[in-house]
Length: 118
Image (cartoon, rainbow, N blue to C red; front, side, top):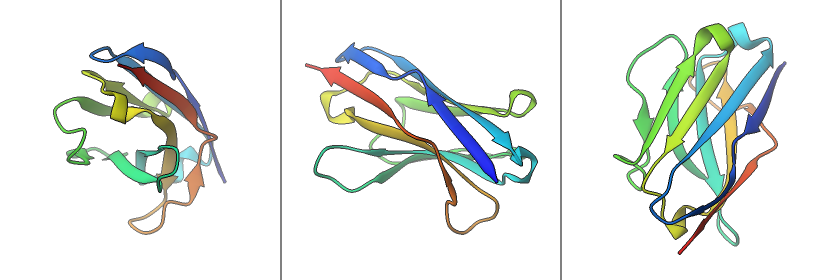
């Protein structure tokens, strides 16, 4: 089992920045990918960004490319999402996720609220 705990959400004005953190524990050594998803009110959960735990290029949703950066710290079993140039449409609950292969995302955090005011 892998446990994920997010932190770093909050309220920010449009154009501002926030950094989310996600700490993994348990069988963290078995993680292949870590990623971030988000769910806005009334919408389905959507992919934001992901990174392979062993290295390699991260990948992003088109809506956040150039504004968000995902980075992993293997030593700390933590993944970060640096969000800049935030827009009101970025408002959502952000979830950290992990998977042990290239298939389903099997582990999820509890979510952290990000609210961007205009």
